[in-house]
Amino acid sequence: MRRPLLATALALAVLALPAIAHDTWVQTNTHIVRTGDAVHIDLLLGNHGNDHRDFKIAGKLSSESVGSFFVVAPDGKSYDLKPDLTDVGYAPKEGWHTAKFATAKAGLYVASQSSDGIVNHGKPVRAIRSAKVFFLASNSLDKVPSNTAGFDKPLGHKFELVPVANPVAPLGPGTAIKVKLLLNGKPLAGERVSFVPRGVTLKEGMDDTYERITDKDGRASFTPRTGNYYLVVAHHVTDEKGEKYEATKYAATMTVFVPDKCPCCDE
Image (cartoon, rainbow, N blue to C red; front, top):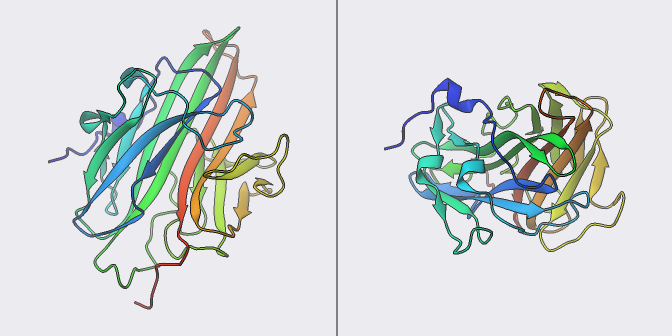
């Protein structure tokens, strides 16, 4: 039986983190399950120092570096995933962490990881990261509801990607993935957002095919042509300084699975 998180558990943990060039992301083995079935939630680390050009695994978070890792259910309750984390790699830098979560109610769920720590590669830098993925529990897999609520509610991360349109259903080739980028809860304009398909390496610099700049409301939109996993990612660098760091770097990711065919039918 999972225990709901205390409110304080949602705070970002200050931890020793891997190199600043690494981002975390969260993904699931499936984006839609029958209510009562379980979802396997993976926490991965990628070496995206070159402006996040790919969707490849590079290294693995240490258990001490995971930070906050939880699921928010449709009723708003949060469940800590850290006690159930399993390391699927043999070596310290191989594989990833995973946790099993059983859905209890129909509706939209979000799994999220966040961390806040100091790294030092030439100079001390504060690294703030957030990662999330959504999945849906449906009473019927033949008729998947498309009017599920809650996807556009921020989780309160310092730097966060928030869906503007439902990130699970209806979704398919030709349907836009729409997000809003928030910094300290406010829209961040003029920032690059990448929509990285698995198996694709983006061009150097600005890739007009897969990257967008947020508008005055912090919004960006991308329309996939094919089904795939898409890693939505944004970075933000500031000169914010503290007693133990000389700059601050933010990273936010959101994983979206786009099926080759929209799963929704008339309810």
